Amino acid sequence: EIRTGLLEGDDGRKELELKAGDTIKITTNDEFKEKCTADTLWLDYKNITKVLTPGKRIYIDDGLISVLAKEIGPDFVIGTVENGGNLGSRKGCNLPGTDTDLPAVSEKDKADLLFGVEQGVDMIFASFIRDAAGVAEVKSVLGEKGKNIWIIPKIENQQGVKNLDEIIPVSEGLMVARGDMGIEIPTEKVFIAQKAMIAKCNRAGKPIICATQMLESMVKKPRPTRAEASDVANAVLDGADCVMLSGETAKGDYPAICVKTMAKISKEAEACLWNERVFEDLIRAEGNDGYDGDSTTAISSVLASYKCRASAIICLTTSGR
Image (tube, rainbow, N blue to C red):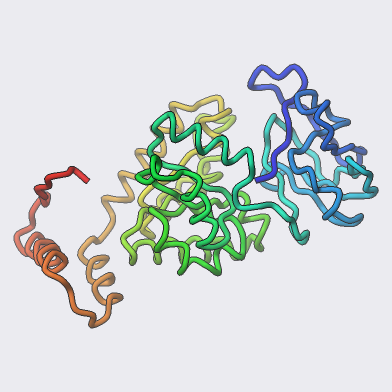
């Protein structure tokens, strides 16, 4: 994932305004890594000057800001801000229509992964996974010591969406990363990708997380829009196992209220789920394949719970997993 540097004098909440029509210099010179201004912005993608051409666009912070490239130098790009906005530190960047040579796992990623192993993390969220090979590369870095760490690929581009059927079996779950996805593929197709990913993960029995801009207006306001509330509820009704906040809690003015609001919406949506119908749909999707003893017992238990209107099914386990 390509990211900008730190704003000069950043205290963790600083933002600067980029105005439409202004000229900006985007550089890979490390002197500006922690000294980004409205005139000079550092990016961590060293080869950007080799792959970008004049006339191409750089999208920053989920497309909030776009820069049109005008001139390419040895370690800089001179561009014009097409649509402005407030920019914070370490924001993600996208280069739609530009073929990048970014590896699935960079050298910095490897160092971060090994650090995570040493700290005993439970899961890794892997950005811009395009195929099963990307997941395998992450697992190879984790090695034997990190073999029990969950890998959750963030599906953020068209290639990842196309390769869902090979990514899901080798992963412990998926994340619908709608921010970058909405730049990499047409906005009007994001909901199709989201529903496809949720359905495929439900069928495979893998956890699916829906993320990005779910309660975006609550970054600055204590109440969500009605559209945002519906977005959260519909993700739950579609079968998402987790709905995730990002900027709302990372930089927002009302982080605790955001969590409480999302929790209330999710609980209300879950109460509306017709679980018996969902179960029947999943069984129908399985086809006529035979089941082993464990699966047959589990299916029979669920069927019995519907007949006797059980409040819960309790499973005894030796491992807790």
